[in-house]
Length: 474
Image (cartoon, rainbow, N blue to C red):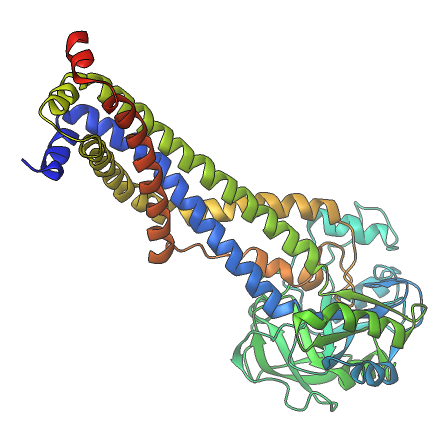
């Protein structure tokens, strides 16, 4: 009988024990493979994050933060200065506004109440007249929203105040990008056309459009001016879709602040030049005039993903080690049970390598069965495990940054397209962990490696004993 046939037969000598061993191995190997898949998925997401917004710098007025802070507004002249900085490939000006429902504003005015915080302005503390719209916000204020708005200057007691909706984000842009520099994900219709010209076209978030029963070609008003829905976009979150995009000149006209910018999105030509371009921008614009930050807290987002990647890698090593330990213990038990068999093989001239190979092949049979079942477990569990790891880690990180306004974004602390992670927050929660064949093969190869070591060590230690000692002990 060949060594392979004997090894396979030995693996099924005790079927109940084999089934139990395979079941335990399947759990350990499945967890190891799931962690490896999660690790690879997060690594790919880090690369995607760097590729999509890693070369993006955000320029805000010095001292400004969302709709808070002081300082002087940015200007179109500063945008031209930023364009001339070496390694800068594009500069997009942004003007941020907030809109209130016209009927709600009129009811508040009739009741002698003011909107939260008085006038609605662009970021950096630039005041502007209240802007009203026929749109109804897609996000209900709820208890916290009403409480926060009351704290921001609305008169009257909580019990008598009318229900208020959240403001709607309105952003003027100079190119088809959102407030993080990522391309807008337009799901229906087209863009705004000439982004450098004043127009009456607008892009609506899918949630906002659905709330108001609007589609491409429908119309709505801002300050009694009629605008046409040119397209719908999906920002990835309900809050982010409670927004309107118009061209930059249109937003500047609505705010009554021509030539002024809330922020600038600067794209650098490569990751290698980001730090140099950041320093050059800061010097060209002046530290007292502008604050230059990288990718709206991109470093925080990437750091969070790197933590998840490290955790998943450590968990993979731990699960792989557990599988190896299980195989080692099983093989120690089997070797001890077969000391007489080993002695007989040695007595008839079987070399140590043949004895070792027999037990290694037996362990590989068990590992192969456990890997097959573990791969199925990993295929179903890897996505959930990756999501749980990312959700836990990013929630913790977001909690540490809650309360920060949106640099150059909507100005709503802790939410929207420029919340704690800026636009990266949408990418953080969109990691797709799929059990690709390459990753599974690599994981199973690692399992076979530890299985080989786990089987070979006890077999060779026993095989080194002289046959007469083994048989005498029996």
